[in-house]
Image (cartoon, rainbow, N blue to C red; front, side):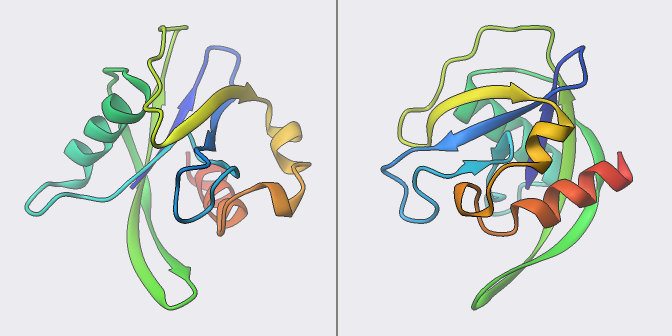
Length: 130
């Protein structure tokens, strides 16, 4: 699952992945990303991952599903959006180094070597379907 967290100014929260991560360490990524636990539906997984990674309890809105390919792995991911009004965040250090809000134009200009695999595909899906 992927959750795009936006503020009242329409900016999108991005997370810089922890250097402790096996994949994509130190790269910028979608606000929240994760996987469903066995038997867990997408919406519950989205809320759980937001709580685990950022310490926030937010309502999530389903945007759609997309097929995401990562080299030797393909998965169906659900995309969600959540709105924050400046809630204080508690970052999960094993997952997240830091977070910041960015406008769409700033995100479009991030160098490709500074963002996670499939970042732009997922962002473009979100922007087209939100």
